Amino acid sequence: MAKMHIKKGDTVQVISGKDKGKKGEVLRVYPSENRVSVKDVAMMSKHKKPTQMMQQGGIIRMEGKIHASNVLLYCDSCDKGVRTGIKVLEDGSKTRFCKKCDKTLGGK
Image 1 (spheres, rainbow, N blue to C red):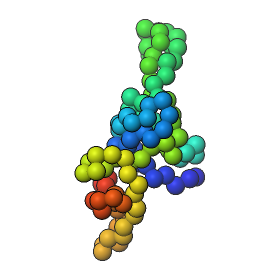
Image 2 (cartoon, rainbow, N blue to C red):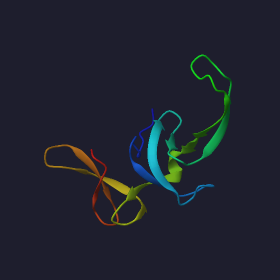
Image 3 (spheres, one colour):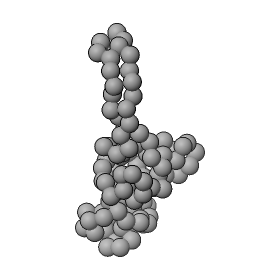
Image 4 (cartoon, one colour):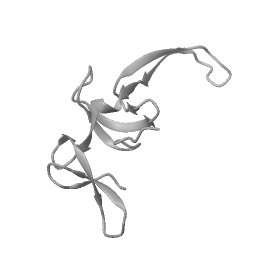
């Protein structure tokens, strides 16, 4: 399984493709495919039949998958997508940081 630089819940900015420049929250990560699903990015239409669970059928709009290389982690202080590095803290835990402004990004 591939190691991902993006995690679920991160805010990212799309850097290429039809949604270039958009930013949003990562809804789901697919490490085996090296892809991510981002809120309101790569929207696609899915035709659903009526079922017991969903009485009303029709066309459903949902987020598609985009390649992880097409997104960068978003830094609030830089106000754009940035490259990141990893720092090891004194207590042994790891944290991600912005390579431009050296600010810590993401919770863990």
